[in-house]
Length: 159
Ligand SMILES: Nc1ncnc2c1ncn2[C@@H]1O[C@H](COP(=O)(O)OP(=O)(O)OP(=O)(O)O)[C@@H](O)[C@H]1O
Ligand SMILES: [Mg+2]
Image (cartoon, rainbow, N blue to C red; front, side, top):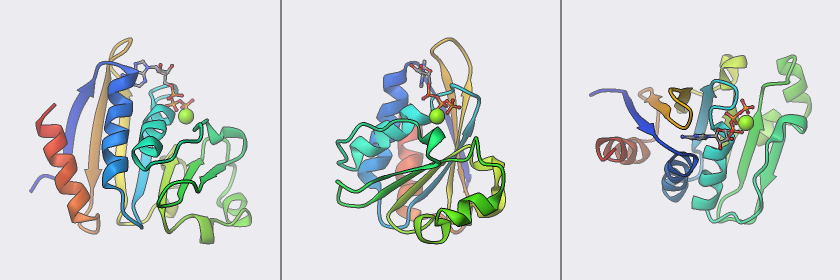
């Protein structure tokens, strides 16, 4: 069975729609590792994800805070951005051990510290492929949650 699917989105809204879709499937322990070019759409994906999880607060970029925590949905959402982190220590110091698991964890620039990304993670790479077109590659390993993987495969097949 393939462990990667790819599809394109043609607008910011379509990328957010995919986020909303995943947000509706989200269960406790879901971990999403985001990678991709600057300005590819990672934060917009997370905005959709939050909406799909029933979170209504404005989702901004956690670039200057390292993490934003949203607790007004059924599950907490922990939104990290590793872009400006200099070392893993900084992350442990702000409580990675507690915040890096449980609820739903989503990390922008996850490839900066790959050793922090758990085996059950769903990896999503967003690549620029046109002015408003993005190539979305989703991959996972054998530890990833099966239900979510099935839903992603169906989603990709319909796009
Ligand atoms: N298909 C698309 N999907 C997502 N965003 C798109 C798309 N087409 C255009 N955009 C635009 O690309 C930008 C994406 O910004 P966003 O902050 O989400 O990117 P990012 O990957 O989080 O950037 P950074 O690396 O700085 O964190 C927005 O201005 C958005 O309107
Ligand atoms: Mg961002």
